[in-house]
Length: 145
Image 1 (tube, rainbow, N blue to C red):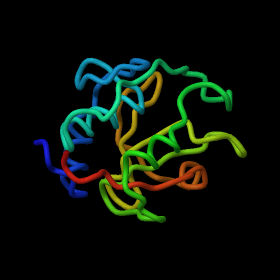
Image 2: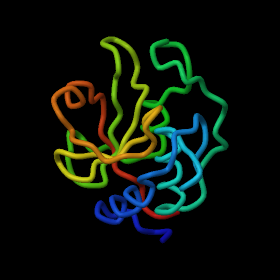
Image 3: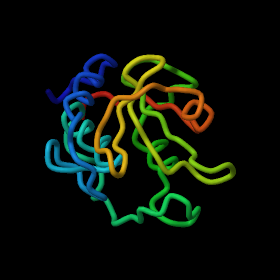
């Protein structure tokens, strides 16, 4: 489905990953992925080839220095979305106040999202107040190619 970067298309692709087990640094539908792996997989299905090779990154979301800079990567490869709650929007979450965003998900509705969570795998859940107050940024997938 490469080239499907409209919001509902992205939602359909993201929901196709539901049930994929959690595996740190993986991005293979039905086999395993983490939150970034989910976004990478949807990118490949919607946009095409990934723009860069993914470096190894830490699973320690509590450490502000650990891992890749999700915000910087999203700013580089995705389109800004303001505070959009449109389906198909990529959202980054800041898990601790003052720390950089360390978790990502794809909105399926203004009040729901798909993400990969350790111990759970890929699921669709409510964007409740606990999650909503941790949103750090919103982005749209780029156009094809």
